[in-house]
Image (cartoon, rainbow, N blue to C red):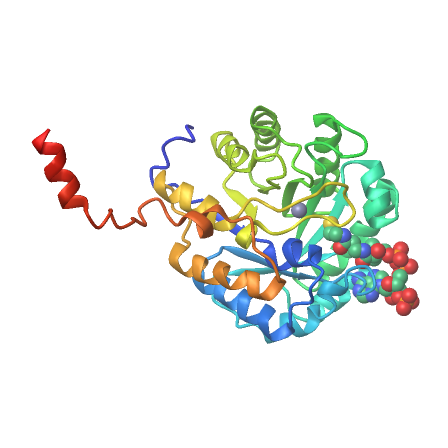
Amino acid sequence: MNAWEGGGRRIHMQEVGTRDGLQAESAFVPTCEKIALVDSLARAGMAKIEVTAFVSPKAIPALADAQDVMRGIERVPGVVYSALVPNVRGAERAIESGVDELNLVMSASETHNLSNLRMTRAQSFAALCEVAGLARQAACAVNISLSCSFGCPMEGNVAEDTVLAWCARFIGEAGAGGITLCDTTGMAYPTQVAALTRRFRAAWPDIELSLHFHNTRGMGLANVLAGIDAGADRFDASLGGIGGCPYAPGASGNVCTEEVVHALGLMGYDTGVDLERLLAASKRLPELIGHETPSQIVKAGRRLDLHQPPQDLEAIRERAHAR
Ligand code: COA
Ligand code: ZN
């Protein structure tokens, strides 16, 4: 495979801005605005949307309205509506609200798992097996997001073998149908992404693999391309590039959905996403969150959004020819 030639290959874009993005914002986005945002992303053609998180409202007040958002959205056929769930309580709330997929989260790094989820990884794993059992009974799909798969801001490098060993346990023992390798704080780099993706794909060709990058060090889009080259076809991204884990020092926004869709479209990939609609949704974000977003495409426009030449272009041309 060669990432430089899309050749119409399908890449699934998975929006996480309404979860990963809004959880990091201090402003509480009104429930009706969250619903409108999810609906506009679905209509723009996102393959999957992580609508919200069913976490403790004390831990993440920005997403305290998870149930109302989930119940209020329009269900566009073909779109998978997912939600982050940390525990049994969250799973019960999510299932009751009708989510298609539970996204369970654990960290590949012990220190990050303790600071984010207040449990050891072994405790998290046992708890998540129970949650996965609940999901199965409710015919709800289970995805596992493995935070810090490309490095931990407190521990440093996380060994590939450690990451893959947790993947093996989640697939084999918890029955996960999908795994997301998360670069929680933007530590991933392209050659590392390619190596881990190849090993994952070789071990589990039929498990849904997603890659989740943050653009903290400007390597987001390069990592996406490296992932595609190594066989990945599902990517998390956030509208406007907002986001970041509140329990990870120095975390910042996800790769920006419109930047990835714009680049992959030019390269001949089929993301199924209508960039025009995506940009319209992204342009509304600053008003909702109270500040500008990092989106370069909102700032600069698309590659072929052209500008007027100078008004006196003809005069310039004549003078130039007369020289
Ligand atoms: N939904 C709603 N409320 C929840 C909940 C859930 N999924 N999980 C816990 N709670 C509530 C409990 O009812 C309890 O409320 P109370 O104080 O009114 O009795 C309170 O939260 C604490 O519960 P406890 O079981 O002691 O959990 P904890 O304090 O150890 O918190 C987490 C554990 C992980 C559930 C919580 O810290 C959390 O939701 N964190 C958010 C993690 C996150 O989203 N990180 C970013 C994404 S990677
Ligand atoms: Zn993230």
